[in-house]
Image (tube, rainbow, N blue to C red; front, side, top):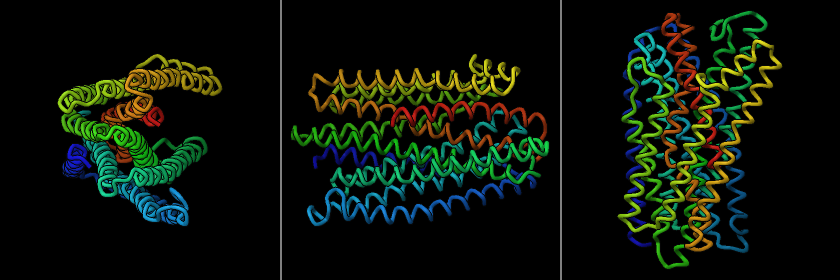
Length: 476
């Protein structure tokens, strides 16, 4: 292994550890925010206990599944043990377990901070929109730094310790297993609880939304955390690991054929820069007094995007990487932003599509459902075109370097798209935190002004959750 790859692997580990340090600082900052309302503290404790109970049950089920899966991998992959090298099978099985563990730890950190930040954001809403926004966003940023830090650290350690890309695929498969349980299981729970709360409370008994007399309201808030914090975090952890693993597998093959190590070094370099850019974006994020939360979230993303593009260009020049591969990753980054803009247009409450669906409500539920589905289907078109164009453009730009580089270019476009995933997850986790905060404000009778503020923050959170889903699906 050449010093260049080793250097960037060490840099990646250092950046990942810095991300954990940033997450710890943000966690403590959120914890220090004042919270003295006993009523919402009581409700928040129920939400926290419910989330931990769900997570414990989910992880116990996952342990059983992963044990069986690890044994199957040990016996049959990459080759049956009676035909291949048993050491490779062991490495892949152990890496698979590490993949689930790293993703699980990130999810646990996310639930821990989300169930603290919701109270802080609720009480801060009595002071204004800015302190409430910062409590919610920095709570989400803990999850963002934890997910991307653990994914980069895990991928780097697996390849550094084993020097085996097959083991890396095992790590990626472990992340996928965790995403399956966390996203599907958490998502089903949150939607079931949400619909149950509405049917039982608003429809049958006429109880207002987020009324503590309705037990399903607590389950709904628990679902926001396990589905949209732990679930979406695991999904993007999986996407990030899979994109890096695919790029590293191809880079290793190209380097082996050429007798060099520059392509693998480039993947680690770009991944580390992406996390570093997200850290800068998260730690410098702010909102003006009485500002627009959606604009603040979007501007943070744009700042991170520009930092990544500029730093990777400098690194490409300084370390003599292939400019065509840099262009492929830049295309992926731009398409990711386009997907975000398209999602924002169709889900922002200030844009025409949302107004059109709201107008359709005057004609009854059938028109509302049809209008919502129609705009939902229409919203996928820009993303589909963008993904197709980015894959084709990345392939064609890198094709002059060889057929292998053309395929490598596509994988680097995915790396580019997910390069700012730290900021994307921070924005996404912000959503359920302020959603919970809105409920806590109503349950704690904190006043109409605080309710208006958290409604505005919740609306912005719903928009960025749609953007995040676009990134996750687009990169996959």
